[in-house]
Image (spheres, rainbow over the protein chains, first blue to last red):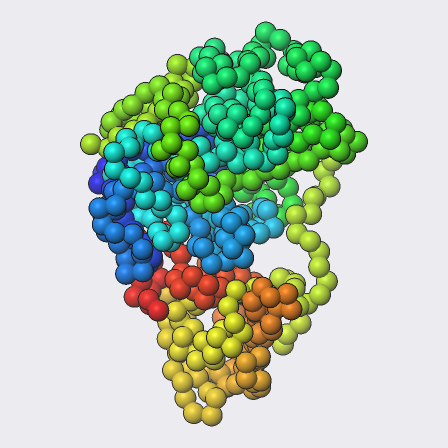
Length: 390
Length: 189
């Protein structure tokens, strides 16, 4: 089959690779009909994430049709499914609490040493996101093997086009959980840093969860425009001082909740330091957490900070005094996709959310490398890329 | 920025929870490891007690043959492609709770170990603790080789227990390898 594979920094290409096969009883093979490039894929593209091997297949936002099932899968051949980017077993302590991205079992034992040493406990398996998350082949391909297919994939009805439901795989639940973590109350003003796809779904979700007002912060004009179209008031941080503007707009009290939808900057996990950490169990690379600092400083007293943005290493100079003295709450985590899927599908089917306005480009899978390059180099014009295997 | 190493592991002194490389044991390499498994204690004990089940999740163990009087012969993949035979006998057992074993003279490697199954007092399943200790093949040189191949007892115990938990809780062992490379793709329960 054809698949988008990683070959080093700024080097991805579509190769011919072996088709995936059923390995375990609960597996299913999905024939991919649509798949997207995620902002976090760019960290892989920038070679910022350790644990990558030449030829690894990328992609964790994918959907398609069930092609083949193992004897213990509950799916049926021919069903149309969206697949969460998080792989979860459904039977461990964490899955029992619906904390699916904390699944204790989905990361193979020989791959989980790295995250166990780096973070104290092994992280769950993900699709297409380095060997630290299990080394599972991703979905920017014609076919994908989906483990624990009785737990993850959600069957979607015919008659709803792919583009409308594709983002159930990652960015819609991510934005939803980000808004939920902001614990929105009636009358709240929520400030969202980052108007990328996750930021946009966060803005949409904040309004759906009852926010009275959303202020969105970015610097790219088209992304700010998209945020505005979704009801946010926008701040361009190249043009205004964000904290001053937020104070003025909220008449001195500050936003009730602040959401960091930016995460670590391009310096990322600093691969040398993570590899060192695996060897030395002490040091981890320093994440650049400018946005996190700003959310803590900007948030009103007693307010909430929600962090969907991804971080990987050790933070430097966190305003912990402001955090404590203002009595803030921070809630964060990788998305527990499985928890939210059914409700979010309902919202889409009821027409209560537009899930496609952020798509700027649709390309055949064969042009995936061009998609990566442009998404990386021209983020203002290329806001979200959806790939279609032919 | 301070150069002091930051602790990302809690320094816990109790040997019951410690994942240390040098735990007391007769042999050169030893480890204690604990895991919490969301299954009933008796089910876990019964599965483990039939040692023929162990190759299902112990990657290095190719086969186990049960002999008389609590003895068993284990064929284990060693470093550099050579297989070893471990011959052990059960030295103590408390049904449903505890099994201890040690090697016999005919064993290629001297080793001992125990496994303990305890109900979690707060309803979260079973607490499983394993102690293994052995003399790595060919002394200190062998230990280096073993380390390179990631077969130190600490790493081994961690991985075997994780796979045991995965198998017991989910009915299968997750892998990202292709079928021909995946360990024992035929071991469906």
